[in-house]
Length: 153
Length: 153
DNA sequence: GCCGAATTGAGACCGAGTTTAATTTTGTTG
DNA sequence: CAACAAAATTAAACTCGGTCTCAATTCGGC
Image (tube, rainbow over all chains, first blue to last red; front, side, top):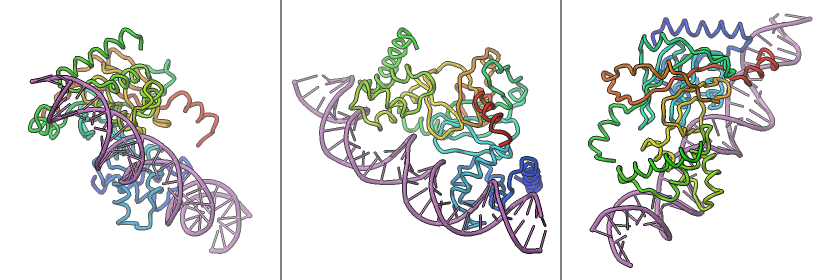
């Protein structure tokens, strides 16, 4: 992410903190910046590693808690995917994911038609829906290649 | 799930095994049956517990391995969600999910308009897409209630 | 019924994420 | 600007979902 949008995002986070009465600590700011720089759906550990080079005293639980905090206040999002380690998304805007059902990798996918979908009424389910994502499920390029050479299995 | 559709599903699995040259063991059959009975997106441990009552000698790694196997051959699916324990879905047909961003719970959601979406072209991404799911992201009823009584935070 | 290959069981192991309690920091208030 | 209470952070131990290893068993083709 380029520097100016990064500054915007950090600024917006400061604003959100003021509004919600959340504390804006040095660690939280560094962690947010790290997520904004680590574009490809980083894990908490990816973020921990990146942050450690800049602020070596930062502890692992701080990174984990802060990522949840940042997602809760809406300045980043938590991704939905089939793997079993949490992945965070620096993007909060509407976009979609291509999910590989073999290796659990996923990548962003842009599509205006999908963006334009009306959110269906879910009031009878008791859900207050604010957003949506379309997951296109399939097999990624490298898994296709692996399947071809690997043979039947 | 009712008995007759369960039998159908088990039968289809036997068929798939014959076609793919996969072994159709007693454990795999019991584990598949357990998933079909445990409707609400069970975790591997949910399945392990259910299976243990019926076939007490079954080992934990067998359940974990078998669930991955069943998903790989397509007789069940693995769910995409923001929590950090894997959840499996007895449904393989097209349907969608309401995801709670507070408690990570998710429930099925049926909608014909969403089902009718055309899968966009993803050939330039190297992905071979076979299926899709729409995730409606928001806050579930009990989390809304908790937020109201719990106050601002 | 035999045989080789694949699967299973048992237990140890790994590592993502959380808990605890003491310490530090934040932002507010006098 | 110093003091204060509340909230965040640190460090280390801990939990538990999931995986690895390897010997024993089972499947299914011959």
